[in-house]
Length: 206
Image (cartoon, rainbow, N blue to C red; front, side):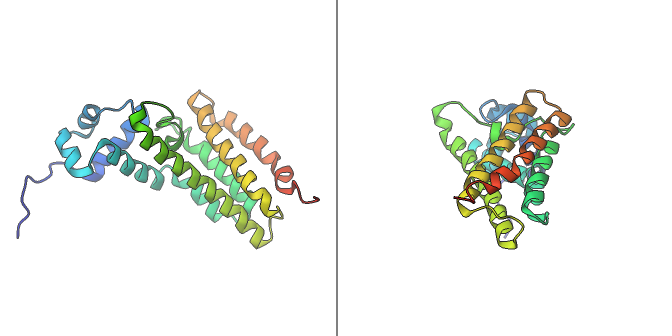
């Protein structure tokens, strides 16, 4: 039986990419449904019909962001042979992504909705949970290094080390948003990795 209703006159995948670009440029609260409708070339009613509310659309946008621009740092964590190399590659991949010539200079997970109206607390918590997921990925990679024998950090140190490098990732995004160049971010990465031995051996003699 043929489906009822008006056929869509836009490509949802293309529209989602356009929404991503707009949210990335303006942040969550700085982007209205009218802005989205204009950028996506559709009526607001079509956005609701295809994607749900603005918050629902933003969640879908963040899934796309995670699978595209957000993927290189995660891939670096997975693919490097040692924990140290993985963390180093993750930081460098982050610096690459947030200083690219074709996109805004910041990570959406960190700065798309840092503060704002009370009614958007759910979106801020959604982003906070994604950031916690990233910290968990770093910790899991450190634990894998311990299991593989290339890292001798005590289990109690893994949470602290993961939190430290998560903080570095977030700081890189803020620095990039404030105008730091790729070369300047590389000096931050170098300093962060200079702390590796101290961080991963702390407490071993206790």
